Image 1: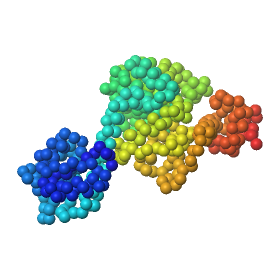
Image 2: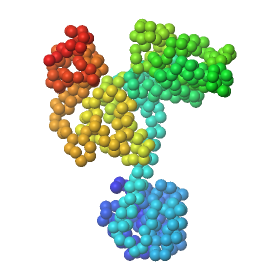
Image 3: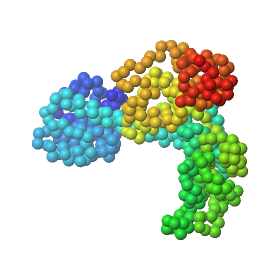
Image 4: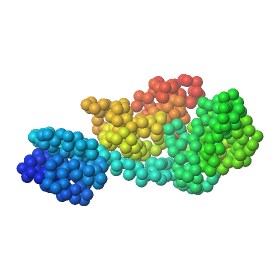
Length: 465
């Protein structure tokens, strides 16, 4: 229990007041005691209380009056009623007025302590959630949205701040789960367009005709099933921002139409000849190299160059591991507020495991882990479940080696097991990497693919024994 939270006893009988005070103090709780509802209300209004325990029958104002005043002053403050035999109807009325619980005389000290502790737990959770929500509200800025202290994320924040105020279109590139939509939202919310719509559309997996209608809208009767006019995403985002995710999956026919919108800022609904002027900022996102795809004629080069006026490259989480503790705390704050749970603590061993993980799902994967931790759902990455002894981290050498093993495994996976390319990415000699692969027993598989030594080409022959 929090040492700052006090229990207030309101009881006009001196013996009962003393007995309640002693029972709660013996249970390790801070207690204040008064003999009237008026005195009790002054303490409620002047200080931070955990629980109020009040007799129903008091001189002048009674316990029911105090319940109502407490509700008006602080609706989340639990009030426990002490009632005499035959006052059950009054207790029910008090519960309807907002009382937390009631205890019928005579009662044992154990019953009093149990009810008060239960009420205190509820009070602490309520106060903690309120504090979490206040903390989250204070993070409504680009620093709050793009969490981290690494140089990589600092560069992203700087670029967002530099271009947010201009109407220029932006291309965001990053692996799945790195937060591309979050960057698009930050660009929108820090721009003069923040009061206009932010419209998001995933281009992946949509047939041409459906994507055409989603983007440009259609007129009634434009095609079978078009029973009424529909406003498309581009037109709906007029004055605001349109976020196009997985742009690389957009069909060629749609790429041509999108290029024309970017050049002329006009659209035509499907089935209409009327041109509609639109003022919309396009923020597109991709997880692949569009320059490479355009050189392979798999993506229109003119659309790529038209969108690539400003490009924001998002780092993978494994490239900014120093941000993991801060991101984890942020996501646990969000989860604790969302699920009305207290924020748990993460042990050194668990944090070590998180820092050494390869994070194929990037920030999205970390957020999922944080939510599971708050909910108490066991995750293998966090170590053994409750009651099992986690593997101890005995030295700095163990910690460094575990981190190095995770980093090498991640690079091998990213390069499909190719040792030469992984060595170049890690900026070490290939022979050194081979030695470390043997040391950490990574020589069998890497991310599900057999490892390849580039001296033998990409034929699948392993350069390792």
